[in-house]
Image (cartoon, rainbow, N blue to C red):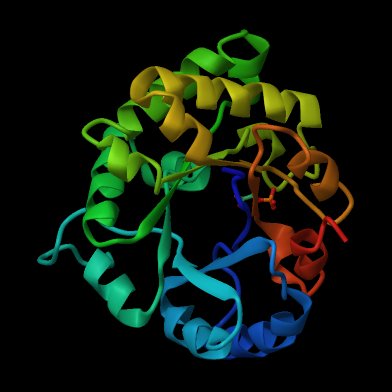
Length: 250
Ligand code: PEP
């Protein structure tokens, strides 16, 4: 079964609810596609506006983060139930910015993956190495550890629902894209790990994205690689030209 490409945006801490409505109203047309899944992950406060603006289009809305408890005294956090109730269907976890600035650990990511699945939210689980780790030659060891811990306790039935995003930290927001070969090498390594953990069927079905300075000029080359099933896109998802990434194959 061929995997469907996923073009996923990560807006980070950008756009107000009213700006969200205006931008998605423009993007609806540009992001039309029958062959590619389209996702915009937006700030929590913008989710209701985004869901409303995307209604009836092929754009799905996701959250950028989520806490792993059901509810309670966790000031400032948002729960899976809140995300689902607001109409979002995906949630990013373990983004390198959350790991670096907010101390999110592999164990936290694992708890979030399990909790999201429990609520039928699709986890977009990020992993990626720093430039130092790449230069030390430990990229794949690092990624394998992140993915292995992130997937602890996830059944094979649930594993296929997870989206894994490989995002080398040195390529995020820097304009420095990994070459398609570098990105493919790691995405293939992740698929091989999934095969070791869950067998062929899950490995063939699970979607693995590349993220790091994806733009309309490089999307086609990256997405053409055998083990790259789309992109997690930061800066370039804040413009209507994100539609050119969605329609990379036209
Ligand atoms: C990201 O936020 O996940 C990302 C890859 O950002 P950018 O595309 O701007 O490098």
